[in-house]
Length: 356
Image (cartoon, rainbow, N blue to C red; front, side):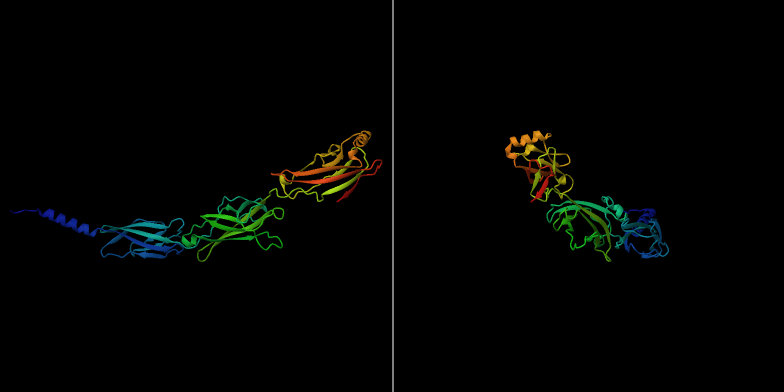
C-alpha cells in the first residue's frame, strides 16, 4: 500500500517547524543607580546575526539605540517615583525581548516630618519654615510617662530609608539647666516623647526643643522640627497666707475694714483662683468679707454693735475668727488663717495688726 503526501503539505510543515524554532520570547534585566547622569550606558543586547531590532514599548527616561542595541539614560531618574522600568523590543525575524531595568536607591532623601503637625503659639517668634509640634504633658507625669508624637518618615529604601535615631536639643535653655527631662523613643512603629525627670510647672511651664531625625544611609541625612512642650498645671499647690495667725487691735468702731485678705496660689487658672469665707465659730457672726476680700465688722450702728459686744461677753476683750482661702481646682485645696481681734473700747485709733 502506497501513501502519497502532497509536496505543498511537506513544504508547509517544514516552514512552520522552522518558524517555531526561530521565534523566542526572552527577558533581559539591567540595573542602574538613580543618581546616574544623563547618557549613562545602562546595558546592551547581544545581537544575533541577521536580526534587526526595534522598540515597541519604551520609556521617556530611557533611550534605545537600534544600531548599537544600547540602553542609556535620557532624563533624570528617581527611584521614589519609579523604581523599575519595563520596555519591549521586537526583532525581525520575529521574537520578543522584555527589558526590565531596576532603579537602585541612593540616599537622596532626608527624613521628613508630616506637614499636618500643630503650629506653636510661639511660631511668630521663630523661623516660619520650620515645622512645629505642640505637646502637652501634666506636671504630675511620672518618670517613664509617654505621649505619642509625630515621627519622621524617609521615602528611600532599606537602610537609606530607616530612621536611625532621634535627638533632642533645647533651643531656649535656661541658665543653669544641664539636663532635659525628656527623650524620644520608638516602640512598635510609633514615636513617643518620654519623661525622664521631675516636672514642675511652677518652676518651668515651657520647653522649646529641636527634634532631629537621622537616617542610616551613607552619608547620613537628617531634618528637624521644633517641639513646644507645655507643662499643664495640676492643682498641687494649696493657697498660702504666708502666715498662720495674726492679731488685730481694734477700737470697736462699726463698718471698720480690719484686714485685706491676700493669700497666694502658685497654680494657674481655676487652680489658682481663690475665694474666702469665715469658718463657723463663736464669733463668726460679728464679721464679714467684702467683694474686695476685706475682713470687716458686720454691724452698722456703733451703739448697736458695742451693745451687742457687751451683751455677748464671749467677744470681750477679744474675738477669734478663722478665715479660709480655697482655690477652684479639682479637687480644691484650702488654707486657713487664725485672726485674733482685740477689742479696745474707747480707742479711736486705726486697728493695729500683729503678725505671728
